[in-house]
Length: 153
Image (cartoon, rainbow, N blue to C red; front, side, top):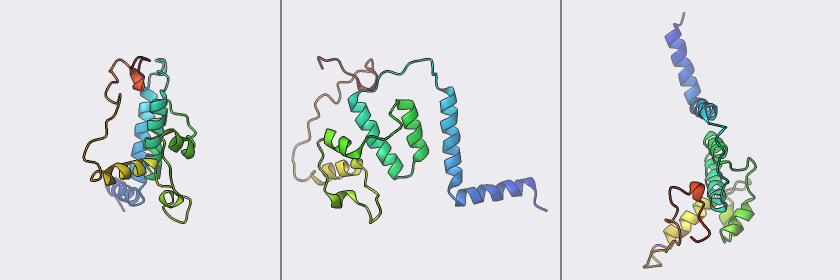
């Protein structure tokens, strides 16, 4: 008859082989953080910039099957539960996509916009001798939560 230790070991190996153990650990972490989250402290409103940034990150996380991480991001950031429309995000970022760049396979899986943005900047490295000048990207002070800036900035 198997010992408790052997049963634990067999269960752990089975859950690891099925890819469930990591998901369970992530889910437990998410639930612990959710339980510890201070609901009485109001979150600052989500800026337009952070809404778009969070959506890019969420799309990347879900594409890579980091679903629990995406759920923690949504819960902690105040991002709407329903993902923003991809075409809306692309339009807001002034990104144009062609259908061949979006489709990963015959199935309806789309490559995250973040991959396209990264590819654009990595592939244009040699074309431009100078660097891209980011206006206002480093002007967010630690006193301005969630990327909010004064109107003067």
